[in-house]
Image (cartoon, rainbow, N blue to C red; front, top):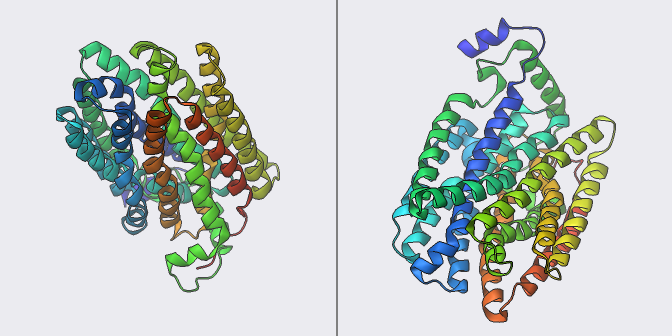
Length: 432
């Protein structure tokens, strides 16, 4: 094919297309989070327009995750079967359409249905990105690949706070903001189809040096894969590491999705921020999460390159992440100064997002044919927290009249994240 011909005639210093692919994935996941976070930013306005109680708000905020969670394994299997490119591009276009559809909703029920569609269509993106990480990145680059992929979460949440708040302010309407966001997402899906490829040899801009670099590194890794036994994906659940991966990501997301869905309302209700200040404070906190994610991935890869074992590196970094995030969110509950609250929330997110390293685990534990399945399984576990956390927090706030016990709930999740991350064996691929 043409891409192969171009790769063959372009030797020399290796190109860096693999990093551009993952910058594209960073952008797509960022847009993914702009769209899902848009409801949290607009919720103070929507709740007044639709007369929604805190418990009902929590139900609506949770609805996205009902389909998002349960489409994770099918989404990962689609990536394994049809390869990531077509799955990523088509999913992006479809979720852009559902984001625009939310703009014409007239009550809470119709908004729930729009969010269900958004959740189902966004679901394949992360498992497909995990699959790309195994195809395009070498073993010592996958931590950075994972954190670039997962870094779209805090970056999108940060930009979403500014973009959606700015669009609402500029147009004077949350509906117009949702329409513009949906249209931009559809354009991003078209770009993904144009630029993303399933393997280095398929990409017209990859030269022979980069293709050989990736292929030779992965060939060595493939020779170390355990032999196939039953071939049944469900046999992965015989291993402690898989269960700890799923539960660890669930506890990580308990804290992450709790802040993503309720932090804007908390800042508005408890700290007295208006829509503009709320957007700015949320941007600062979530952008610190994005920076923290990149820092964690860089430290992990550099440490491994210098001889650190995966168990030492990832257990240490995830342990530091869990401890500092837990302490920071615990202190928020006892802090009344708005500026200090923003600092503590920023600290929580900076260190919490080091656990974006979890997106390197599917390729560490699974053989190349099963990475999509493991990524979908992990994200299913993670997004059970997406289903339950907004509802639990809404109920806590409604019946206790404060956010104190919600913050304690987040701190407990941080402790559980520490335990699960310590119990995973990151060094041995699992035979199935």
